[in-house]
Image 1 (spheres, rainbow, N blue to C red):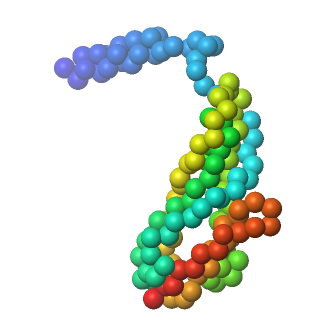
Image 2: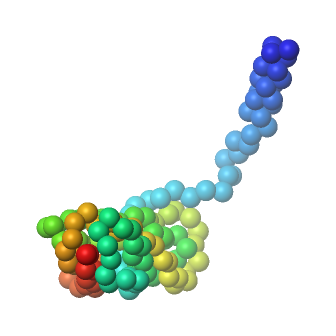
Length: 136
């Protein structure tokens, strides 16, 4: 009985391999490069929180086309209570419509010690949006 089950599973696996499409026309895009994207605004729900708790910090950025989107953050500790955050966007090689759209992304902040934390979010050139969270 066990050998019949193993044989049946093997046949199902082989059938699945042969029915998978390998067309060159598959619809996908390649990320060509990533670069900085300015953070337009930041939303922090509570400017005071408890140590070891978690709070989501939302950032909003505008993208010029559907071939661009959020790639990730550069989150740098610059001292015990200071953070510098830069957002990055990807660029794909697809055919894109030019339409500005806003994307919301988030960082989960979980402080490990009591203090006043200062966040500086890159807003283009040498400009930053500064937010402060007091941790008790």
